[in-house]
Image (tube, rainbow, N blue to C red; front, side, top):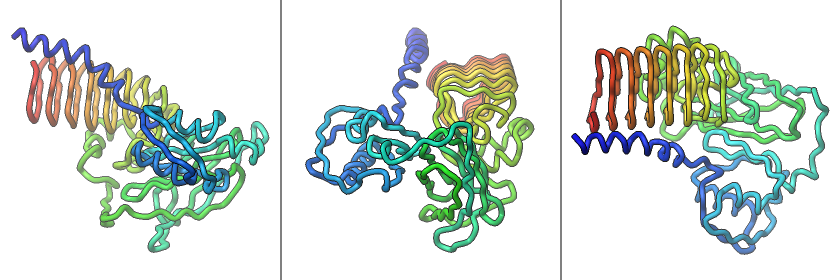
Length: 362
């Protein structure tokens, strides 16, 4: 019994370090050296070491310039500042690091008029067939304003004029992510995107499969409080944006707009209910917290928490905690705790606790 209690205390104390151990791209450390190598080749090496990819406008970087660099145990952010200067402006979109500004580009672009907005429109097409791609999400990586392509592949997106460069990402389930870095201004585009290798064209009227994070979308309570169109747009897509905080009144009625289901938040406040990509910190909901992917840290809801993948930390709810992946930590629920995978930690509920696979705890 003493061993069980010690294990539970260890879970409570250590889950904070588990959360902090999740290294954002810019904080990952690498060792790297290059002598008189092309800048573009150096960027490719850094991306390979860091486990991500770059998106940038090659016209605004001296990609063929020869550079020398030698660093040890330095963060990606510090390495890029050494290469591209302190004026560096970066955004993360999925597994892409988008370069919007550097010391090389700052002298080549002029500022835009304050208070003005621009329209970027065009068509999304299949790279191989040339056919229109329907329901692809197109968004501004800096401000999360977004739209979706219609049946002809057409989209129209209004972007802010505050930045001279704008990063536009195009994403769709079963397609490779595409990110463009453009000079800000009114313009018309044709964006060709490619299907992921090995994927077969499969669809159903629901717009998503039954596996993985889509299990969240099949919960009756989720479908009751979340617009079906937004569920379909989120599909099985990954996390594409990382925000410090968000506030929602209801799913997709909040500061993250249509990108809610694809955004990780450190602090998440859902006045009634929220539908988010993930939480890596603290989430509080008046009624429901819904996370398509993971919840790491503390999650408290008046009625229920629903998480599609891994849960690490502390969950408290008035009625239920529903977890479709592993749980490592502590769960308190007024009625029911349900874990459809492995539990490491302990569960306390008023009526019922359920774990589908192994239980290591209390």
